[in-house]
Length: 288
Image (cartoon, rainbow, N blue to C red; front, side, top):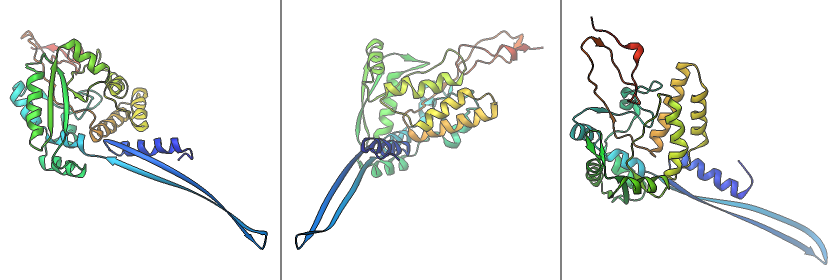
């Protein structure tokens, strides 16, 4: 740990954020004292004292409380007829070993008792208030407006007040890209099924837009995953990445739509890649 007060403060705050705090404040105070003792006109002793006090204030639980207050099954069944699944976090199912099974194991889950406990631990047992912006547009077979209203109703059950602010796409994108929003609903996809196109964005430009500074551990994991050629090792790296992302709760995966395509009866095994617009052509076979 550094001896510089400014570096010490930065390290302590970053450690708190890495441990899951929503926010943290740190102060450091340094004192120096010098005492001189004189006896019978002669110098008897000289004492020098130095001390440093560090104070840390941590805010935890608000993001995680929102995560635990959302009815994910209700979103998928009620708004898109069940034609969606969820990945644990930013990486979609089907990429680098990510799967719905992982979501069941360590992904976000509705748990109102946990949400209330997290709010109490964060010092806001009666909830808190924040604003959600979103484009006034359609999404898959529903709309961002309906999704926002559903989430607003869900989090209200534990006392969280979410103020909805729909806007046209131009203004929404300006607010989002300019890092001027507290929270937003946004789609995310990639031009190819390369994991780094998701993970890199999550800790770089999207993180900047949401005012989040990822930990060095997370940045290193993303770099390691991009450089790893061994499939099993890469899968383990990305699972660790997803687990940290779930714990941090900066992003909440609401749904991953299941798209349906019509194909000729003479072929089979037509599958879309997780980035939707591409097919796994090597798997397509004659039906007979």
